[in-house]
Image (cartoon, rainbow, N blue to C red; front, side, top):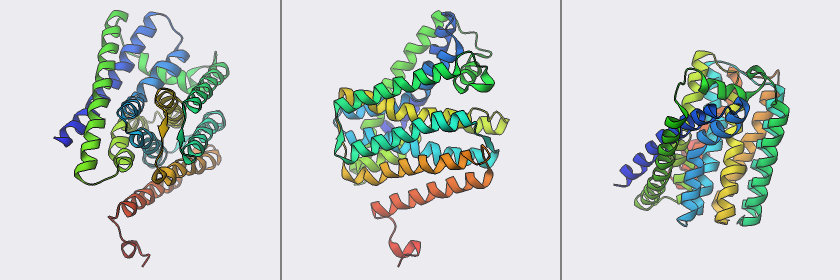
Amino acid sequence: MAYWFLGGGLVLLLFGSEAAVRGGVAMARALNIPPLVIGLLVVTAGTSAPEFAVSLQAASAGSPDIAIANVVGSNILNLLLILGLAALIRPLPSPPKVVFRDGGAMLLSAVALAIMALTGGVTRFEGIAMLAAFALYLVMTFVSDWRRSAEHSVPCARALQRLQGDTTSGTAGLFVFLFGLVGVTVGAHFAVSGALAVAREFHLSEAMVGLTVVAFGASIPELFVTLVAAVRGHTQIAIGHLIGSNVFNTFGAIGVTAALFPLHVDKTLGVDLLAMAAASALLLPLLATRWRLTRPRGALLLLSYACYLVFLAWRQGWVVPSMIGMG
C-alpha cells in the first residue's frame, strides 16, 4: 500500500503541475499578460509546484526532514544529474547573465539555507526573509529582462515555448488550472504519506526517502523538459531553467513553508545541505569557462552525483568501506 500511495502521489504531482502550468498560461494569455511575467511567475512556479507542495504538506504533517530533504535532493539532482545528462547529449550554452545573476542567486540561496539549517532550523522570520530575497530576485530579473527578446531572456523564452500552438481559452484555462491545483494538493498528501510509510517499512530515515525517491519524483518535470530540449537542440534555456527552479525551490518553497511552519532540521541533513551548496559552487566556474557546459564537464557532474549516491548508501549502511576501496 505504501508503494501505491507514494507512486500515485508522485504521478498526481507530475500531471497536476503540468495542468497548473497549462491553465495558468492560458489565463495569462487571455488577460494579455506579457510573456516575461508569464515565464517568471506562472511557468517557474508551475514546474516547481511538486517541490513546493511536498514541502508544505510534509511540514504541516510534522515531518520537517522530508520538507527540507525534498528540496535539497531535488536541487542536487537538477544540477548534477539532469544538467550532466543534458550536456552529454548536447553541449549547453551558458550566457554570462544567467551565470552571474541567476547562478549567483542560486549559490546565495543554497549557502543561506545551509547556514540557517546548520544552526538548528529555519525560523518563521528567516522564512519571511527568504521570501523577501526571492521577491528581490524576481524584481531584478524583471528589470534586467524587460523589453528583451526571447533570445536574451530565459523566462520570456520559456513562456513563448508554452504559448506556441496553445489555443486554450481563458475560461478553459481556469478549469485546467484548478484541476492542476487539486492534483498537486492531493498528490502531495499521498506522496508524503507514502514516503513516511516506506521509511517505516524499510527502517529508513525520512530524510533519506526525501533526498532520493521523493526528490526524483518531484524533479521529473525538469528532467523531461531538459532532456527533450537537449535532444531537439533547443538548449538556449536549459541551464537558466534549472537554475531558476533551484532558486524558486530554496527561496520560494522553503521560504513559504518556514513562514507558515518553522522547520527544525535534523543534524544528519547538514552534510546534504553542504553538498547542495558545493554543487552550486562547482557548477558556476564550469559554466563561466567559455560560457558553455561541455560534454566532459557534464560527465564530471554525473560522476559527482554518483559519488553523492554512494555516500547516501554508505550512510544508510548499504555500502561498507571495503566495497569502495577504503578498507
